[in-house]
Amino acid sequence: MERPTGSSGAGCRPFRDPPHLKSHSRFDAIGADVAFVQGPDLRLELLQPADGFWVPELTAEPPAHIRPIGNKALVFPAEDLGSVTQTFRELGVTIVWEQLDLGEGSISTAIRDHDGNLINVLQEGASPIG
Image 1 (cartoon, rainbow, N blue to C red):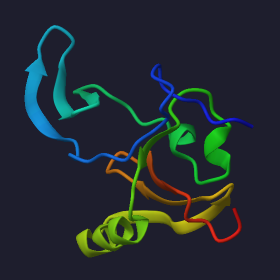
Image 2 (cartoon, rainbow, N blue to C red):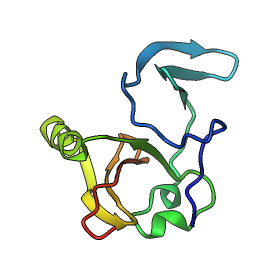
Image 3 (tube, rainbow, N blue to C red):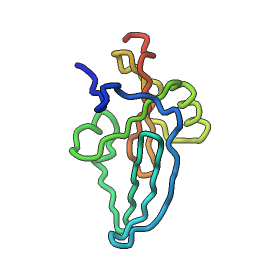
């Protein structure tokens, strides 16, 4: 299966300037706090309403995490997954899997954020079997 590419046809590139927290504020109109994470090719808005509720099926452990329709995972490219994984360990981040060989030339480390969302960091061209 061919991997999708962006509108430029260049495909995914690792971040040279990592995304960072740009600002944090409150949207009173919808009753939610919001944080803006921004990088050169990315803007991510994270919303947290005061009356939010947990849906356990959306944060099931792999491989059951693909069954619910809706929230899945954020995927970020990395040039050195070993260093990224080591940083996660040093920071005490909850790691779901470390440097898992996905085949087709890719390895990945997945973590959970404090809300249980799956965040996957992927390095292409590093798999010993792909």
